[in-house]
Length: 71
Image 1 (cartoon, rainbow, N blue to C red):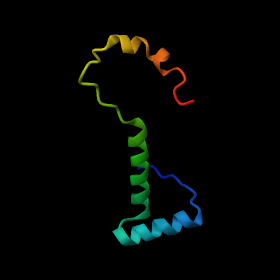
Image 2: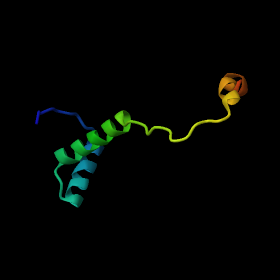
Image 3: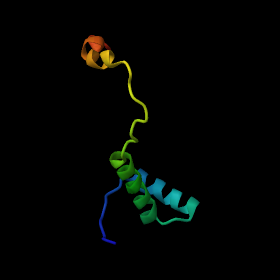
Image 4: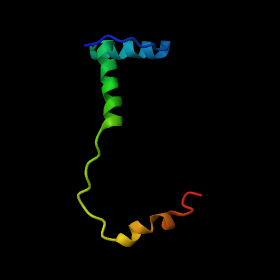
């Protein structure tokens, strides 16, 4: 394991200490769990589609059909 340092504002530090006391886990362990969650959220692979779109005309016209959407 490699050592790194982070800066926390007072509220985050206090909240992290509370969670550590409630769970019996170290602050370092909680921080690692948070980092793992961020990595998972941003690097997860999306499942492959199992079905096929049968209405090919719609896929070719997506720009036309979506024109003005959300305005």
